[in-house]
Image 1 (tube, rainbow, N blue to C red):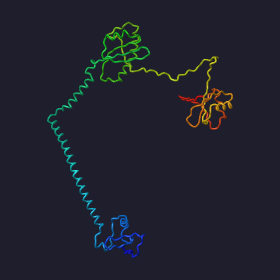
Image 2: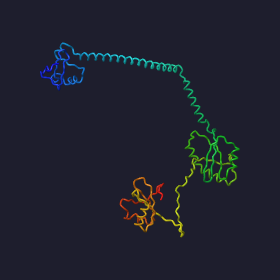
Image 3: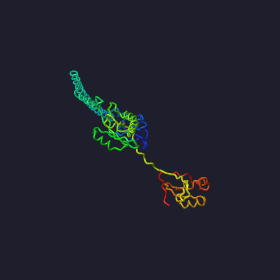
Image 4: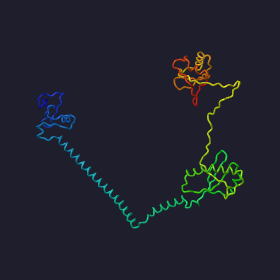
Amino acid sequence: MADVCIICLKALDKKDVISVCSGKCGSVIHLKCSEMKESEKKSLIECDQLHWMCNKCDKVEVSTFTVNIINKFMTTVIQLVEQVKQLEEKIDNMKNNSACKCSSNITTSVTELSELNANPSIPSSKLKQKNKQDLNEEEKVPKDPKLALRKEKVNITLHRGKYSRTKDSQVSDQTTEDENTSMPNLTRQLDAESIYSESDSKETETKEFNKNYSEVVKENGNSQSAPQRESNSEYGGWRTAQSSRRVKKKAHKRNEMIIGMSQTSEELVGVKKAWLHLGKLQRDTTTEQVEVFLKKNFPNVNITVSKLESKGNNCSFRLGVDFAQKDTLMNSNLWPQNITLRRFLFPRRVGILPQ
């Protein structure tokens, strides 16, 4: 390999970027001295498969680089052509399959239409469904509402209490007579017949029964002292009413408390106390220390102290004092700095440490 650039005729250095001719001459040039573009120079440096040839060798021989590129392009073109053929075959198959499916559906629909045109009557399957629906509707709604009757058994109490309602489709005359003889004076268990209506909704029933309930109770109460009424009814002339109101059990009163009102001179005397919350004390403060502080600063005030549970870094106490002496503690300037004093609000569960 020559030691001089054939273009600038300067000596080659190890630091220079050079390019060697791939032809027979084997001449060397500085890459900066060539007439190539910057992109071509960059690709020539980075790609090992690229080769450079001088003008003399280029005229005699064809660059191997161009031959390789042409061969690669040809192979890629052949592969692409094969892939295109495969895709065309797949598309043709999909078209044929879809056409077959559509044709089968079309033929079935055409045959059904032809059958309907030939026989315009309703298909048997639809006719069966329609008959079933008609039968269900006939079962739900009776033809003559006067003939469709039901019997209901109603318990009505004339005093303050509960009443219950039960439905029984078959009630014999013997059972009703036994019930009338065995029931107490204040309660009557009655059976009556009520007529079905097409609009048998809960709202209409509750409105009618609520309206007639008070009237029926009055009539039943007035007829207790009178002899047995003459009536065509088989239940002694009693009218019945059905009420939608339900008497709920009253919940037991919680947290009941009474306050004494009697003024006596006995030993048992009630004291009205005020409870205060003393907070933001150090964690290690004890009940004895607080009591000593209170006796020293408030000697004339009787105060009870109890330590409370605390989850933080501070501790707190509950103070009990006579209600009349509450202001002496609340308005005092003897409390240490950063200590809080406020009214104590009793939660549902108050945790007090054992003394």
